[in-house]
Length: 176
Image (cartoon, helix red, strand yellow):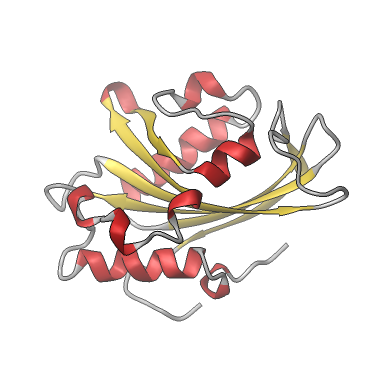
């Protein structure tokens, strides 16, 4: 299930934008991310805030994510929102926060609506002080299998048993 996210027009563009916006810093600030610069990415975008106690909260959810997941989860916490993948997604966000590096993740889900859903995610850290990650910029794309895309297909999806793909991304390298 290897996937070259750098060749994906949404994920690759998001990583290039993140790299450009960080400049000489190790991570860009939230205020460096301007929606006017990235109108084609906005539907696939999410902003995840790091909050006290090691928790995370969704601050912004793009329309493509609302459609794929079946609802707008802005303001909610992943540790109470998702039944199956909640521990895994919190681990992923924690890895981005702790490593201060982008992370690509590809996971296959089997939904209750008989949709084979593959989520391609790129999570990139944001920091106001270039030391502590206070937000994560996420960008997601989806591949739908067995039947055509269905709005709200996420339902109570469960991870497919064969795992997926995870890759910590070198923040400075454009090479795969």
